[in-house]
Amino acid sequence: MNALEELIDSLSRLPGIGKKSATRLAYHLLQADSSFLQRLSLELATLQERIVKCSECGAYTEDDPCHICSNNLRDRTLLCVVATPQDVQTIEAAGEYCGLFHVLGGLIAPLEGIGPEKLSLEKLLCRVKSGEISEVIIATNPTVEGDTTALYLNRILESTNVKVTRLASGLPVGGDLEYADKLTLSRSFRGRVKF
Amino acid sequence: MNALEELIDSLSRLPGIGKKSATRLAYHLLQADSSFLQRLSLELATLQERIVKCSECGAYTEDDPCHICSNNLRDRTLLCVVATPQDVQTIEAAGEYCGLFHVLGGLIAPLEGIGPEKLSLEKLLCRVKSGEISEVIIATNPTVEGDTTALYLNRILESTNVKVTRLASGLPVGGDLEYADKLTLSRSFRGRVKF
Image (cartoon, helix red, strand yellow):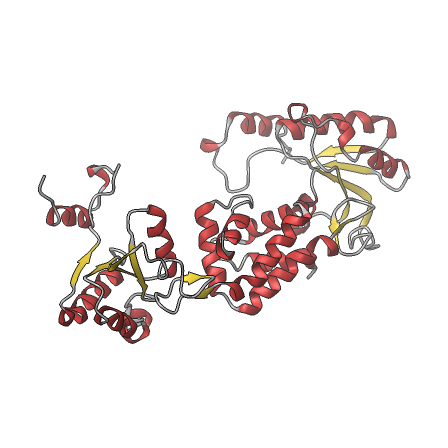
């Protein structure tokens, strides 16, 4: 295998990139600006050194604790529980939420052998019991695993007297009743709100 | 910008990778095997040093001349003219052709300001005139630019008394008459072959 084939092989191991896309990328990189290539190479080499998990919330960060946990202007009585570090970024990008986060590190999925013991639940309970938090917002995906995890969280948080809420599920903005699936439609009926 | 955002920014400059895919890739790489990341980084950093253009045919190679030009078992009387180094790999992968190659480095495209002077034509004429070659197979894409370039090549090669052919254009194998466009259908009529 020559250098080009090696690169194509490595690139095609990335998610969503098949052999054809990898070939296209490799030929593009071959003709790319050399400084861009060196920068990308350096960024890859140092990525895992520079980015760590925040010891407080579990999100990816360069500084520990992360800029969210260490920001005193944020509402420290709100705690949003998400499955992955990427979810933190997605919610931050929406710009709606101004409280703290807690990353579970996955969702309960018995079929894949992921039980509650694999999630960051002790730390969550510890943070909730520490006193400042008044509401836990569960922001797991509205999927079977997300729903299961949300129910489980609700049960273990019952004893703490903290308000537990969950993100609304229903029709997406700009969506069309005609194309909504049955489950989404039935959820948006059950979760209907007063004008 | 932190390390993760820098990587997402760099990845999203690659062709076919938008902001969302770049984010997905970056988070994947963050959790990937560290040795894989180091290998990919090294491959990117050394790519442009290790891969050069063959001084004979213009294809990408680690050794100059490339393994095709230096292979004495190949038919040195056949010369296949292609637009890009990637086309060489595509044709080699099909395993049908066993002659030599010549990479033009592009196609004539007046609208993009690419005239014949930007292509490797002198070198091509020089190779054809050197004597060994008996047939030049033009393997440019059946597009406006590819057709224009093929016609131009045919004209400048007329004086050399070498046989000039072009790849057949017509219905793709496994295709359906119903879905063939008019141009393809008309070409497959004009290029019909005797049983």
